[in-house]
Image (spheres, rainbow, N blue to C red):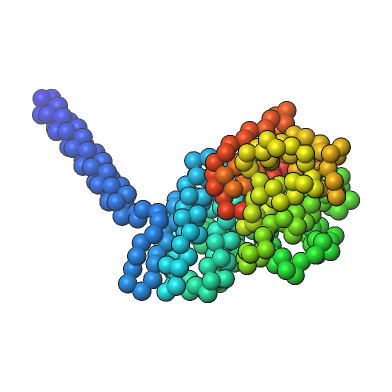
Length: 336
């Protein structure tokens, strides 16, 4: 009996030691993996510059948004360093959202417009590779997009010089809405959404760029995320406040606009039909009304300004930070 007890205690001790050893090995492996992950930012190599992207490329989460925008703005500021080419390193990246994808695509096109050679490295996750292929960045090999949420994405971009209001006719907008939502053209929700999207795109034609900006593309991404239909429109223009200052004499008669966040919030809250002139001034207010009737929420970024309109009693939150180079309007509608 005593021998059996001793053997049992020895077995328990061996099991405990074994578990502790396995746990130590796991910790060491985890620490090695953590140390091996390169820090997001710029890394200089002999023949090119490597851009190491952050873990999550996204504009919706406040923390991730700040990281993403700070990262991209830093790269825009010093384009001359990319003359010998650039390597996109996605070894850290675990997630790319719709809003993150649209900013990434714009940055990619910006580098191409400067005749920069781009190579790719470290795409470890299959979903990330599918997203990069689907948004027409990664073109080195044929990739099958089998993720349902990614396959619902629609990606469009337009050149401002070649675009008129007629370009955003029934065919293009209806195709975008049907691909994303499946709604028929006769449904009230489709008609409501059809009023929203062309209005935003026409604003890109009218206000998105100053005369000295040679970068003439603006973008529309749409898709399904977190049980919602999401639409993002992005341009690299002069921002809302600069547009307001440009049209101030023809539009509003007030002088308390301090930054982009103030302008966006004021425009969303107020119906300017009584004081507007030359047909300007009601775009954001109309956008808010239409999206509210669809039960959706709105997120707007402009240079050093962010405004969020939630579906709870049309609550409006404004922050004066997040230096986005250009403007992005994102709205989401619940699938139900």
